[in-house]
Length: 403
Image (cartoon, helix red, strand yellow):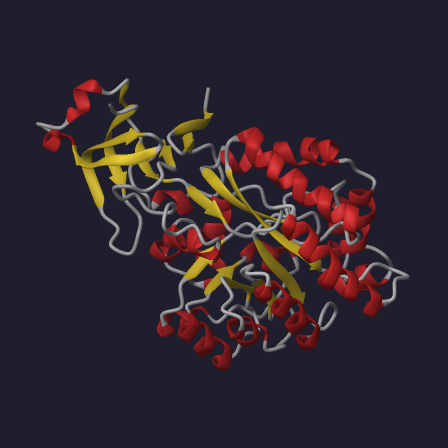
């Protein structure tokens, strides 16, 4: 018996061979898609036995995947936003104790429940924008107990709000003030990582590879440990300077390399060979007033899959709409509408290792869906803001419905 059958005038399947289907129907059973096609072709199917039959006026698409967020944190940094507009650089703010370390202080002072309560409204906003799967990173604790609380909060958010959450361990985000660097690395790599992995809190390992963060040798040490534990890796790569981060990530078969503003042809070629996803993050570029754009044309020519994400964080990307990030990727970076649609669905899912079940509407896939008050998928990045999402569905279950 089908649990749910949805009739819609327009359906976009997503995927490499994306199709627009008019007068469509989609059937769901046990949280998975069991029928997908034209409503007129339902003759002979057991749809009459569906528990819930709906005739909707909206566009149906795969739900969105936000594959790079720092959604869990304490406090905010709106004061730094004003400083940056007055001319202060990110590095200058960080040097005087602001930036990541300011959020570390607020995060360390928060319990798991407090972190969940602070993050839940942010996550609800993204779910109300059609997102049903998330990456959530640690990296604002920078000690064992605080990193654990962040990862526990991420797990709790997924359970509470019904979304899919993949956690990324990002202890190599910054070195805490007045802490020995080698000692910190020893702890973060050799003690915390295996312990938190044993506790089931880590889905991927990430690092901030940059001149003001961690160098290649340090990242290689982390990634070698993660690989030995069987944990996939991702990397903040080449955001502010050319550090060879994209190429480094591919040496460990990284799921993704993210930012990539300064990635060169060597990095692009390495990503093409490895199948590593390029995660494009235009909101941070906008907020930081950067000038160097990621090499979109080169990535496109090499066939590198490109995802788009919000990079939601308190300092450089206070972004609460993945659709807006999609629109910015078009207007600021020259991505095509088709690229950003796939980037927020199929390729976003791939960056999280979820491509077998999410990001594309196909028979047998998990029923992660979004219903929109527009006629065509191309309208999603076209409208900058607005309440376009009518309902977000995760595994066949409604996790958001607009009143």
